[in-house]
Image (cartoon, rainbow, N blue to C red; front, side, top):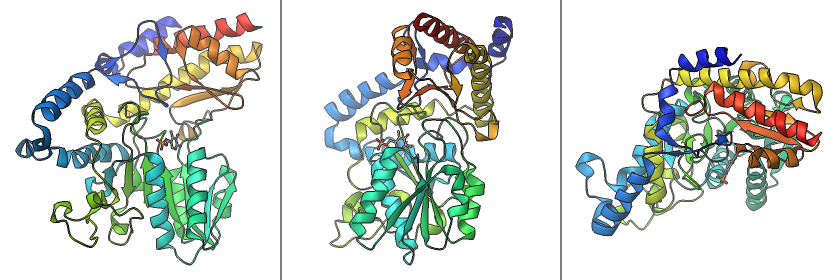
Length: 401
Ligand SMILES: *Cc1c(COP(=O)(O)O)cnc(C)c1O
């Protein structure tokens, strides 16, 4: 078995990417879906921004280096273009800034505005809490009788009724790692006049996303998970080109204006997705994200997906014998088309198992009530890491039995 894994690692076209990350010794880090590991080039970039651009050049950095594309003003657009490639969008359809939660508010508000005669926001009952809370809060704020309708994910297609304005879904379930068929759901929604809002928190950077191919309307996603932008990294927002001229920005700030430095008295939105940016860009964290995204530059996204599936297949295969000895149930689909880049198991004592695993340097995640979650990052994991993780799980379960 080990030899087979070593062969897979020897053939891995992404093996050289691991050296581009800082990873602690003796740790198998399986939580890149909560906070991606740090790309090695980030500290130097931040040091340059701090000492040179902020410390020395000060206010001049907003425009200095514009000829080389290094000015702070253009930083959000440069980062947006890098994200666009990973999510199958055109650069002018993507903006970067704020958090995923805030961006969700903006695009959901735009979707409801574009479908004014309908009052229902349809969502997966198990959607990530912030998605549910933002939708609920926005509906209440609008005060026009909007309802947040929560149904099991598999019933979404059947619930696309004529009162539904927008369907809000996370492509990959943060607990089970189950992936929805974005193209099929989007087509079904459009057939009923429903707009789609996709949360790509567990998709972007984990595998190639094809927003244009799917015909998606709106999307948001995180900069600090599979994009490795660092804690609290700015998030992204996608608005399909066809909606750009009509999609209102609920938060119309000066940086979303067509010409921020004209200081006009009334708001005139930028033509591209920058209209969804609100205020001054977060230069420090945007710079870290910018450098983190460079790691993807020479990565073939097909290779990324193939390796992710190979890692998760290997993990599931090696874990199978433990499922026969311990109360461990696989929560992630076996079908490749329905799997993201994580594998989850249910275990009655999951919180304690994960605490012990973390103590052994196998860092995954516990998700209430009983989920053990292991995120696989094709840029920095090897098949040998997978075997190490399984040995750790085995030791913990035996110890606890
Ligand atoms: C991580 C995550 C978020 C995070 O939102 P923030 O505003 O960055 O805190 C949102 N949605 C999903 C599905 C997530 O997994």
